[in-house]
Length: 474
Image (cartoon, rainbow, N blue to C red; front, side):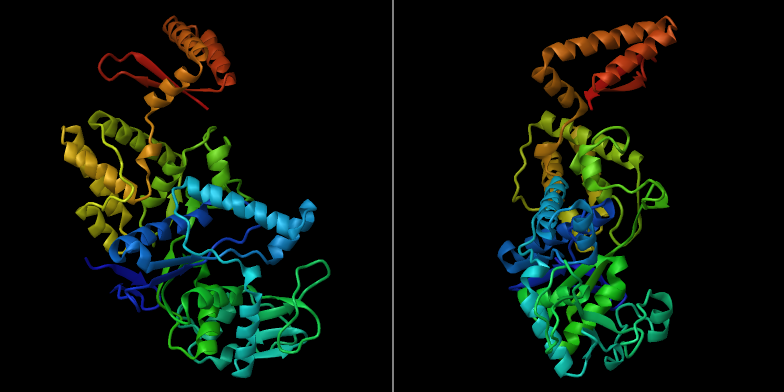
């Protein structure tokens, strides 16, 4: 089966042909660990997790190497550690653990290698000294900067001229720069900041710039050239452009990565996510707090929302989408329970699913296949139910974590039968009060249930027109 992916470098969909089919190599830019990951950070994790699963299926698990880094030295990390009065190490360890827990809840597999920037300072310094020796970088006032005009092909990924990039970028103005677009490879550390002996004979200790980190880590674990480099569209320029410049000039190679893949932006309820608008949402808040919709959401519902939009397109993350995703998982749960299907984690994906994913990770088309399997399963087709489970498992939607609303209620009743009996009694009294048009009493009972941590869902029976109420624990 032929895999085709959209290569940002070429601006077209290409047949994927790995440099070495015996070792397919992928690097994806990971988190800067100073705070909880927001849902925009989670999108590339889900996107490239699907690609990782597909590559493992096509080439074999032992023939794929997936590297996703952790940035644990950065200005934001320094500022947050100082604000919280904790050590940088304590902050980064805690935040990395939070990140792993959140991404696991979204069904993401761990990468094969997860390098940390602070563990690769030696590799960064060696690359910096190579760039200086080859005339692509220079030392100025305790800094080492990349000489952008020294690379004639700079801008090939974002397809911008130097003039366009300078006009559209936030360029740091510094008198020691030869050119406004030159970027930092190494800089002096301020008092209290992490520091290491500097390269190139610089007396004062310092620390690396952001861009050199990924170049050095990718080279260490994947080689001078590799197959796929991925990340969010916002990283195309300047981060990925600068990675290419550093790596190609240091290693004298025609490419850094053969294919560049970028996922689209994420917005919330039709607006750009920002703290000022009050719509900034972390994965932790979705999973563990009542910030969105007054309740916690299952990680697989969040993942399913991410899969409903093609990865290269912008995605509008909404509460309605979460509700629909959770309902869909509940309907699937009831189907596989009816057919008594058991998931097999290493099951091969059904043909229709594999074909959809091989078409540039077309997850909307893949989900259409799951809907088709579900329709056939509702008609009694056990083989279709098995396909549904196998396909969902392959997409990282672990059926072992599916629960219908009724299953949740049943589990709550088993855990606390007295609570369940009390809830059912209050619901009956509320329905009676509504029937008598005693709205104040009905509202009082609802408030009492909410105070108990109960979420009520009212719906009319389509056959009788009577009010029916289901419930779940918040």
